[in-house]
Image (cartoon, rainbow over all chains, first blue to last red):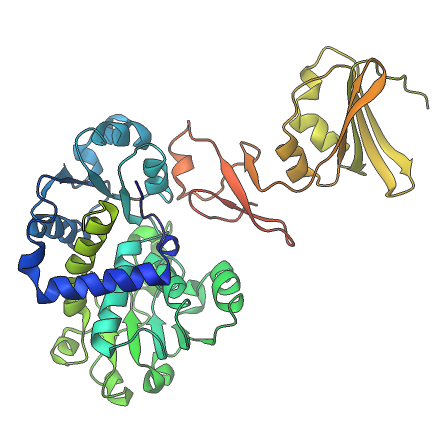
Length: 304
Length: 138
């Protein structure tokens, strides 16, 4: 059966189908309430998470299925030194599908290589987080009515931010998308993403350190957190963590129909005062995450 | 300089001049108890200068590793003193346990049993990336 490790494994048509199903689930939840009856999702979270794990679990319960798993490595046999491969071979006997988060990059791929049931990458270090990207695409589609013909600003940690890398990769496949990459010099988008995605596809992008300068032209502003866990050096984290803080004052120059997104959790990069602004979409984005995961679980389990 | 002919063995030819010792070490030829000759800076019409390795025994060679370390080498298998097979080694699409991933966040840093696999992502610039974490090979 098929797994989802990297968003690039899904074609644009498949992503559009998932968005269509997710929208139908939002409109007709009762229709889907028993689609996965008798199925079990294993949520294997070797790293803490609130939204992703709970949204997977809520998604499976809303499909009539059941959930088992663990929420930190310490409560699994990996604390005793068990390999990912052995853990997955074991879980493969108890569940029909796995959602896995792991601090090490590539761990979900190792999992998928060691089981016949579908594995969904729920985040592997600073690498990939495809269901967050699906959530983001559903949110963009619902807020703007389209995913193409958009200028999107991504702001904050663009070096280690896995959500940003996946989102750039996914949106680069839609027409007429312009990227504005807003970050401190030390946290710019890695060269290989610029070369293999943006430049290889001849896409329009600009890099800037100024959120204020970029603001007026944006249709979407995707804020990210500078993540403490991605730094080996605490001093670097402290120096960079407050680089960008979105406030109502900074939004004065923004478009009336700007869509402000954030994968959450936030620390202080979006002022709480912005929450009241109708352009703040990040909690609606959280809600969308559950529905797109429902659509994905159905697809990978081949449930019609 | 005269180096005798091989009856049954392998000649690795067209090694970029100066790379012969790297291949010698990587292939673990120092551990063989048969005759092995490493010829440095041999004259070559095609390359100007080249290195050559002659091994007086047929051994298993990881052709993908050879292709990664020095694409363009030629491997000649000699049997009964005659050329039995000649293979030009191109740059491989995939290499396994030739180099290690240097990304400290990669799963291979904690799972010691995992093979270190790299795939070719950009042939022109010889860019390989880790199968698991996609980090560029260094």
